Each structure stands twice: as structure tokens, then as C-alpha cells.
Length: 428
Image (cartoon, rainbow, N blue to C red):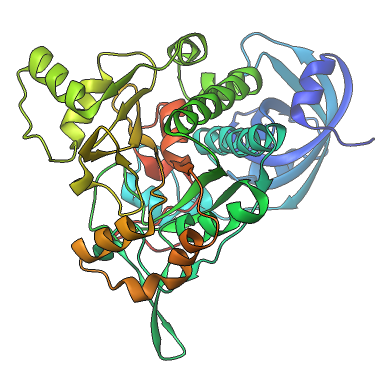
């Protein structure tokens, strides 16, 4: 017989089927062996009787042994997914050794054995949703006239802050892993106008929080002629498109994760609230009696308090210039703030998008570089974009793992990627 995926066998519901996969659970009785088999699509319970020629092999099977099975499928509501297969033929591809992962293992043990733990139903569900998220990002940008564009991972200057750079010994020269595609993307818009990428970014932040990775995937866009409002509108539309695709394609995975889809639905139905940094401080003080000095960046505690007031992402705008990157445009109505914004996810998942209209004035960029202790001569290629045909433009960066963590309702961002990299975690 031709092999089918378990989900296809369940859909068939009755008759002869052939499946293949791995032993997810096993229970051995005197006259029966119960095998729960998994593949990429689902799990199903299979029963081998003591009259079967494969009885001896079935009794030797351990978790993660690989098998091929033929038999009759039928409905049984007591089974894990409502169907069982009575096994006629069992072909063992490999008898697995005793599996090191058992119930109630510590998070650190599971991270040490991540190469095996990604087979778990939870992480499999997350990785399927992750695939949907990446596909939705590509789909949104390609359907709205953006070109995919790549910038170098190895770069000669900082973009987001010198203290979070990973140094690279590049044939004796000190270079850095990319924090963002930002500067090279701004060069690209003069050729393609609307561009996007999904690429890894690297931040050497000495952080052990549940929200930080040192290597993460960055969905970024940049566009010629984009205003500050355009940047916010596109960011909102992108998040809505991602959430819509997950709700359309991943109901089973959300159920496996215990994630209530209703918590995501307001993101599709409502417009994201937009408030200035100053308004955000006033709201936090009023609602929570929590005072933050104007000019300080929002901390996790302020972001979490703010997000608790809404059931959709919120957009905080016009941050103080002193806490934002040198390339963000000054507000023409208030030189102390920039036309920058952060999208803060609900339920305490923090910033998921950061964007701005870019400064188009070469002199102001040079001034800002000097203020943060950077030598403008190291940014000559970037300053050239302002010398030759400078235009209004803007863009943003979206932390994909942050979005996945929120959508899946994860406790820790490390579960939003197959092999997380953090301050202390670089293996496997």
C-alpha cells in the first residue's frame, strides 16, 4: 500500500491504511501492545495483538523507534485522537535506545537535549505556527508591492548601540555581526523603493530574561516616500495579516498549546490604539500610580502595565530623542522627540515592532553621530544616501520570535525557535 500521513488516515476514517512514523507512547499488556505513533501531522493509537506475527518486535519497541504500519483504521472515542489502527503488519525501521527525555524534566535539561525535544508535540506545534508566520510575512510584503532584499550580516559599524555588538575577527580587522539591516536597507530604497527582508540579527545583550535572544529573526521593511503614519499603518496591517493566517491555518496547533484563539481575535477586529510616549507615561501614572521620569525609556514593567489595559497591540509614538537611534527623524513640532514608534503586544509580551520615519537631513545625522560618540567618517556610505537624492522615507523591524511567543502564549521566547541562542545557551 502507499503510505499516507496520519492526518490523512484519520480523515479516511475506516478501511485499510498504511502509515509510518515514530513511537510517541507505548504500553505493553499480556495480550496487546498499545503504540501511539506520531508523524509530522498528528498522532494515532495502534494496537498489536499477541496473535500478530510482529508480537515479539512490538514488545521490544521503545519511544522514538521508527516503524511502518499497515492495518484497519476505525473510530474509537477513547483513543487520543478518536481513531485507532488494528495492526496487520509492523515493520520496524530502527529499534530506538532508551529515550533520555521522560516526564517532568527541567527546562535546562530539555534545552540541553533540544535536538530531541523539538520532536515534542508542543514544540512541533510552535514550529508549525512559526512556519505560518514566516509565510504570512512574505505573503503580505509581496502582495503589497515590496521587493525582497538582503543586506550583509558582517558589518563595519554599529546601528542600534555599540554595547550590544558581537565582534568578528575578519582577517585581522574588527567587524561586527549585524544588529539590523537598517543602514544598508536605506541605500536599497533608492533603487527599489519598497523593500523587505527576513534575516537573523544579533544582539550581545547581557540579559537572561524570558524575552531576549542573542540571535533572532528580524522581519524588516523600508520604503521611499513613507511618512511616520505610513510606517505605523504598514506595521499594523502586517501584524493583522500574520494573526489572521495563524487563526486560519493553525487551530489544531493552538489547541495543542492550550492557547485560546479568542485572545487573538481582537487584533483582527480592532484598530490598534496609538498614543504618544508622554501620554503613555501619564496613563501609567494615572492607572497604576507608577511614575517614570520623562526621558527614560519604557522598561518591562511600564510596557507590561500599559499592555494590560488593551487586548490588541498598542503603538507608542514620539519617544525622547535621547533614547532612540541616531537615524530617527526629529519631530518638527518638538525637537526633543523623534518620529519613532514601538508596537507593544498585549498580555505582557513586550515590544514586537520598532520603527520610525528616517532623518533625511545629512547635517542632523552627523550631529547625532557625534553626540553618541561615533565618528561620522565611519558612516560615509550612509551619508552618501543623503547627499544624492535624499527623500522622506521610513521603515521598521519586527522581532519574529516575539510575535510567535505572543501568538502561541509561550512562557519563554526560547520556545519560539528550534535552537535558541542566549547569553548562556549556545549548544546544541
